[in-house]
Image (cartoon, rainbow, N blue to C red; front, side, top):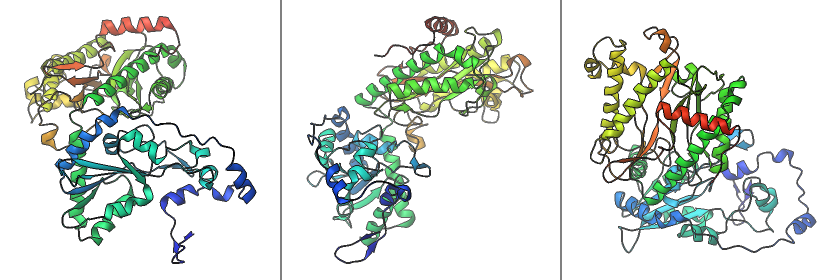
Length: 520
């Protein structure tokens, strides 16, 4: 508890203070004055110039677009807080997607910080931005050595206010100034909105300020907050040049990860939980070459490939099986790839495996063939489903014709592919998910959009409607696709897709042995 020096009243510790004090009952840190003077002395206090982030050239236009979408509103975008994993240990921090998009920050920057975006007083079509965070404390502060949440000896050096401003190209203030800034001039001519579900403390602060200044609460406030979330999601549907470059880096790193996995397949086969060997090899590449994995890796061998989100990854990898690997590297800017390849563990497809694989590949190629500006996003799925239904009819698996199955009253083919063919991709693996239907499924493709094409077929081993030779075979082929002015570019084309190419690629990598591939 802290005591206010002017009122003498006791303040309830903030969430940050409570978290920072976890484990104090077992602390053996010295607190005497001689130690404090000694530990504060003898340090080089030089502060190097901070390098301006490349993203800072692009974030002003993003923020301008946001204030035009939500006029006369002060917009509060928290980074989020650390989340407890167990007792006094936290999960690695990953900032909220909207915060990252409008600040240009990435990796683990910066828990408990907040970006505020509002219309400029001179020009309401332009945005003013202020970043609030807890800067580096001095060596003479107990925070330096005693604070396991913020202390430099515990979590590393934090930037100063000046450094943060240089990096982001915007005004930066101490987080303690946030409340006063949010409350200033709020009322009839200026509303206040917050990204919901990110930081409960900041959200409560915004609700209190709204109430104090006569702004509505309850469902009306919640609807306003939801519009901010929707606007931020829809704005990311079309990527700018910086985002496209980051996606290219994420895809390249992901393909290196797949190559490393193929080199280590013999190790996976030899291990009782070979799927985790695959997961671990990819994670090593993702962490070394990027920020980490963009989502939990799916390493699904045999029948596990028929479980769409198989992330337990505790199964054996047998030579005679296929292994479906759905994985993506998230680079330091937090953009992630999302690629799936289904590989024959032996290096060679069996006739039954090749039959299913080629049907899925044909469906993917059909979606690629129609993808271009002006096509509705939902038509990618419809095109792929025509191919899937036709093959299932030819194999005698449908209770009627392919045409009947494709009708709204049929849909029998979806038994073997219940997921969609495409989703947007970017800072989130399922990017732009809060966008309205008319902006997503029903929208036309535009240059700069990035999404996946990922049809599949999944024949579970206990599916009695499927011939025995197909049971336990699951295949998905997923690529990351950029819409161009006159068509699309397969960003992940360097990872072979055609069965003969896959076999040749695997043979070449196997010959290199269990080594991690060369890095750029």
